[in-house]
Image (cartoon, rainbow, N blue to C red; front, side):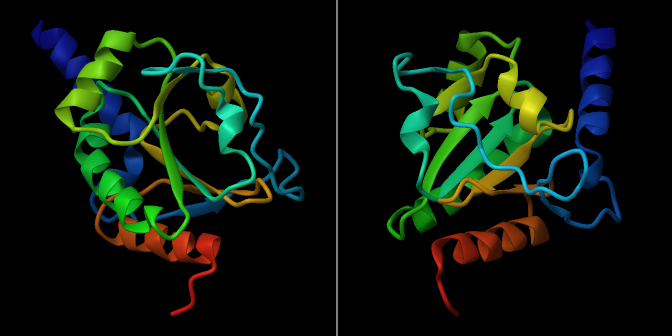
Length: 178
């Protein structure tokens, strides 16, 4: 058991290297492998709804969208989710839609426990592997902001200064002028 806990902790350190001391928040505008063409969200990606298994991902197309990509076992994900949910509530009345997508390979029960533990109020989905292949970088947590034209901004730092960057990008996404 101690070995498993150690391996999980080690995994989370490598899965969220931006959380190491001295790391700076990084905003990545997603592009294709050439770095020239900006990626757009593919709303036909296969996801399974947790509370509503019939809800397709496509219902979120053509609107400003925030996607929280996470693992229910990751301590960094558990730590950052409450701040993300707070941001989701803050901007919901201004037109932001928010969802969470759990990595593939975890059980629905684990996702439900995460939702209950955090009193989750946004729709949750599970990745069937396609989302990670198209937009993942092998690390969690990640936050994706999807503009109404489908273009994507990925955030890798989701606490403190990183959340300020997320809010600044959400305000751009929603056309909010300061």
